Image 1 (tube, rainbow, N blue to C red):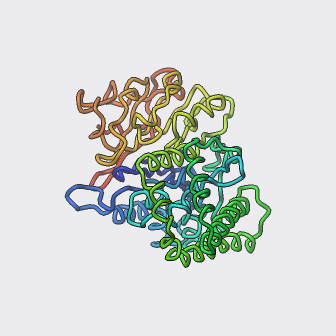
Image 2 (cartoon, helix red, strand yellow; image 1 turned 135 degrees about the vertical axis):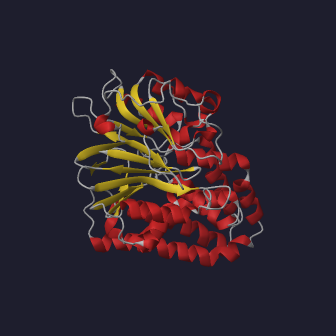
Image 3 (cartoon, one colour; image 1 turned 90 degrees about the vertical axis):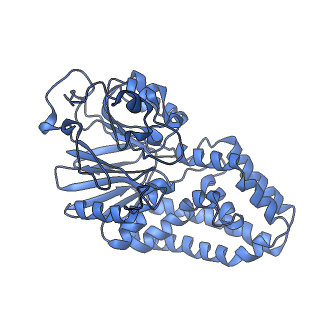
Length: 425
């Protein structure tokens, strides 16, 4: 890895890593708003086109999605609509399974899609997991799609990266999410009808089809092209059948009761936290010595997820990507005991989650942030770092040294802004 660019996409995330071999790895690409400025000058779609043009000269382009929230995924189909062959590899997270062997987050997404009005925030929040596989496969084909989970690895720029989280099964889902799924099922079973029976069978078959699809697209799969295509097609056809059933489902006497279960703010928060908690966490494989390749990516991982992989983490990282946009919800106390040279924070001006947690400014590391407007420390002192000039530290923060290649290789940019490093400030 030669460089990283943090793109300011508002409350969202898009990081692009560049390698020695003229290849790139884009980790996430999304935004909660179609507009990236309050004056309405920059559309997210326009800015994506700028990114596509900037990186179009790379010989190999790879995309990795950490989890299925809009502010991380919505840019992917936009890029593929502009150029279906833009990425040679696309890595999607494998939704983990509960103790029953069911991909619970997908099951909850099916319930929401079936009973909750499409225009609601809850529906928009949970639709990603249900539709992403089919949508991306339709745009880019199945031959470039792969799934990742704990224990998998992938290569970029000659370096192996190991996926630490989430485990496939059994995954420790929040008890509230498990109970909600069971409760919705019990309500429907107490009101049997042909429509209810058809829905429950469709739901179960769609979950099984999803599991088959994840297995067929896995890194170590033996599935051939026809099998991969057939698995994705099964999901597409089952979703089509579900859509045909929607009018009948929503006219059921218990439809409003089911919708009420999923429309509450408590469920919305619990589901969002569960999706964040299943974010892919990965780092480079240890080669026996600290290096500029030592990076830890966390998606929107929760503190509980970070605790779960604590034993697999190292004490030294050149770069750590802050979970959940650097907000307090994603702060993990374990960062305080690590030796970190650089922290990456993708945080726009607006959006939920609150300000950047001030504890990042207390780390013995340089913070690189897409926007200081959400940082109380920066607003108070003018900068969250103890020095404006990036003097660069050796990997692991063991001492000051000369800036690598005249910069740390970490850049930020956004609409109407030039790409810059802290050395340029």
